[in-house]
Length: 144
Image (cartoon, rainbow, N blue to C red; front, side, top):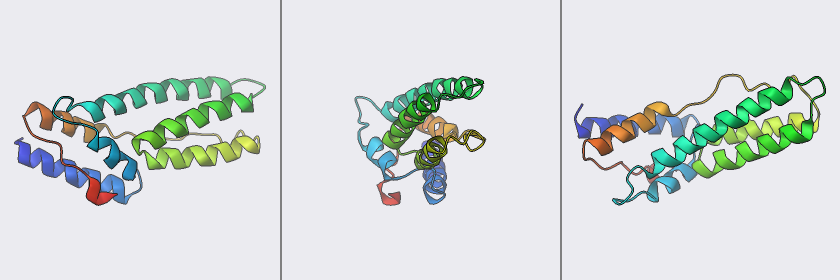
């Protein structure tokens, strides 16, 4: 796939993620921090987010599986996930965390189900391909 086509695919897919509320303006701000000296900046930051989130979700699962659920511990994990998702512009994850914290306040174990995980892997795969092909990542400021 040529660079121009990958860039168009990137913009189209990112537009869908913005329109459907998966991403917000913070993601555009994060993109602006990438430059020629570190074109993989966003991929690196989001990869760290995925790694940290997987650990947090595993910790949450373990905590929820306990006979006596520690809601303070769950709240701390969810608070951390909310902060990191907010920092990369993962709006839907952040919003889900807000709802989960409300369930935690109510000590509602049934409400604390995460359902399916959200992934932006395709977007970041396109980003890596564009950089590898010598292209520039389109800035998404128009979507914020």
